[in-house]
Length: 205
Image (cartoon, rainbow, N blue to C red; front, side):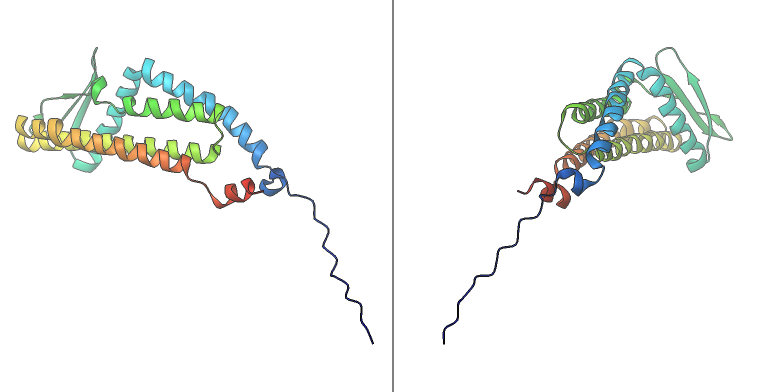
């Protein structure tokens, strides 16, 4: 008695899933998102350079809010010709004001991030969601650090006078902003260069 051995028939290959089916409406929505957000970020970068004086005034207004609600000090914000000046003090009157010049504004750190993010959205291959997330988090970190620095300068000047202002502005404030700028850049690069599991599956043959 003999038996014929029949090999198991190979399963017909199923249709290859396209990237569109894997991501649903991802590619189309991603292109739309990049097409809208890219020019906006490029415009933001230009505004931070051309209209940085207006940005500095709003940035100082944010510091004023923190000084009033966080430190409980009376404030006065003046829009001087060269830079906005914030005065703060207690019941005894307002102390010496601090001016927010171009070199002390967070605009100089955010503008390059906006430029790079805008270019990546329009001409890069990275997911627009990650690029936008990286920019938003990095910019928020820089803004928060500078507002904290300005608030700390006001607090130290109010308590220790010119000596407190000098130490906080020249030494600690500079170190704080350099560290914040470096961390923001590394965070931005990490988010735009990391490869997600979905991207790896989409790129797999």
